Image (tube, rainbow over the protein chains, first blue to last red):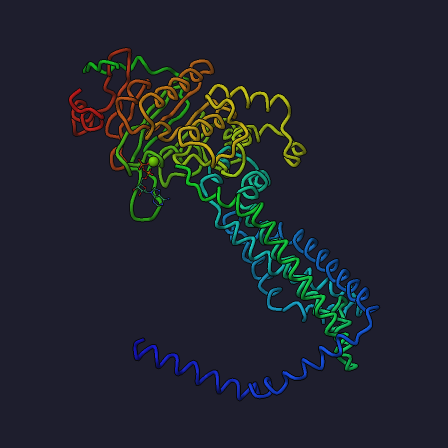
Length: 261
Length: 276
Ligand SMILES: Nc1ncnc2c1ncn2[C@@H]1O[C@H](COP(=O)(O)OP(=O)(O)OP(=O)(O)O)[C@@H](O)[C@H]1O
Ligand SMILES: [Mg+2]
């Protein structure tokens, strides 16, 4: 370890302490709070089993919201990403679309949810709209970047046949970037389930709505049960999407690495 | 192999009246400083084979890209069937449907099958609905399978392109170009890097199609001997300039344009076996 590195580490540690003091992050509070977990555990055990179906139903509703939001969001994002890709369009097309997308991305999903709660009232619809907006902003960027990295040789070769732009997209661009696009879609769905779980905090439906209400009324046991359901669901979905990715996507991506010559 | 004999008397009687490709004082560059091509003049007759030979970086690929409208020259005039090649020109874009271009990198789509790659050549013939549904009509699929057999890829039609060999990839690219029912074929070093036997097999195949369909083929080669063996004309490019054009008439070589060097000197420079 060089003295220079020591100084850098020293500075980082100092910043950490100062920042913690400023935001009132006290490790002692954390340790003192640990016994509270035991109380919650006791409360969980005390919760009547009849709440479990409700929790599962709320989770199912959350998954449905995430699913609709992801599918509709991607359906809008895909054509947008084609328009935003620099290798497919002139500056006059991609520049304004990119600016619009950057603006959409500045909002986290919870802020979109707030906005839509104000617009269409509380409930799942506001949540779905929020997920759609977030998905558009986020996945379009991932997808146009994937499209821009595809090999220009097949594009030039097929372009030299004089095919239309739509044909170029559907016969070259999509097959060449399909594995990336697919794995991004899976990731997005996965991520949206987590996001949707908290949108209820601002009244935009889903399981988070139950959690925040139980917490408000100090029913920590019930809140914890619902949170456990989220945890387990997310773990399962994570595991399933890893399996799907391994089976269908990694294999075809491997093929893409084989050079032509 | 063909015995090369030189005749000094240039015979322009070879020139037919029908010109397919004409270039007049064409200059082209990728950046503002260096010219990849400098003052190229050439004219190519319909139904002939025109070979372009030259060292690496001399501008051969650039010349082909100008012929199919992927690039436009900085200066000079190019006419393909009396139309200026330019992707953004509607009339030329229609002509591109029947200009088969095989780039040096082949430009295959790697994670679709061999057959699907070949069918790409038929894309301009699809109507909007067929194109949208990715449904090629029965006769096109049949034609693709016929060409697949012609280029010697029988049994490989359902392989993904990343699962076939380099020589097989070249055959796929040739098949895709043939699928266009081309009137002009632009082939960039499609047999370089292949063994002698395979190179001749592929060249024979192209010549066969060329004869039957009265195709005009412009082929870039690395090897002068191979170029002479198969071409009606051979142009030699050096540093972006055409330094020699020779016609091949039976066993005779006719010199059409000589620059600073004698034809023999140039031939020696670009032949694989200089003692020949
Ligand atoms: N995309 C490009 N951008 C900038 N310069 C380029 C580009 N492609 C080619 N060049 C330059 O233009 C000149 C001619 O290149 P070209 O590809 O036509 O040569 P070539 O004769 O086909 O060579 P090779 O036998 O190696 O394929 C070279 O100096 C090369 O560096
Ligand atoms: Mg080249």
